[in-house]
Length: 67
Image (tube, rainbow, N blue to C red; front, side, top):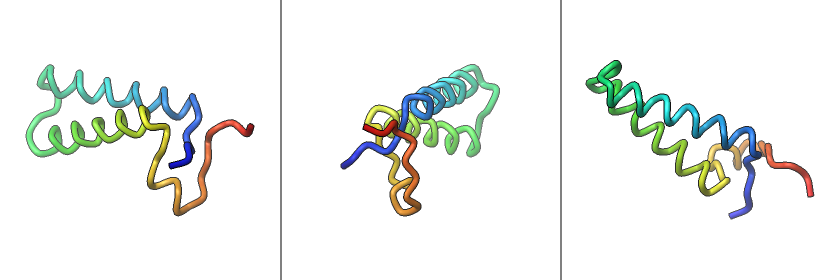
C-alpha cells in the first residue's frame, strides 16, 4: 500500500474526526446521524494513521509530497 495522503490532508481528517467525536459524546448529535458520523470519524482516523485513502486510488489523487 503506497501512501497517497499529505500532511495537511491527514491533520484535517484528524481534526474533523475529533470534532465529530466531541459533538457525539456531548449529545449535540445523536441517533442514526450521530452513529453514521461517528463511523465516518473512525474511518477518517484510520486513513490518517495509515496515510492511505482507498477512495483516492481509483481517481489517481495523491496529496503526498513528491520525493
